[in-house]
Length: 143
Image (cartoon, rainbow, N blue to C red; front, side, top):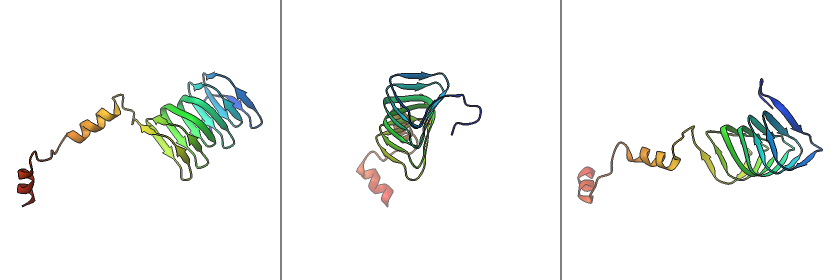
């Protein structure tokens, strides 16, 4: 699942259980069970049989094919594969989601913007055409 050239230096196998804090310089693939803090400099992959319970998965990219109870905060991209099951919020510039994904939580797609997203959307709404300021103008426009 790891892209070519990615430094996948940690794997938690199918029959393995890990509990604690994990900070990875490269990438990690979890095919077993993980509970605790999880931060990766590059990529976190939760395999189809992987089960993760964490306050937040922090990484550049996150791929979920298994089960996650916790939030995701990705710097670049999140990929939710069809077997992915998530209870938690997702924050990322890019979200790819396959048919069949089950998720309960808020999704914030930042589009790579550094600005407050609510302010950005409100500014976009306010720019351009304006609504008439009175009902008289509305009636005049309707004629």
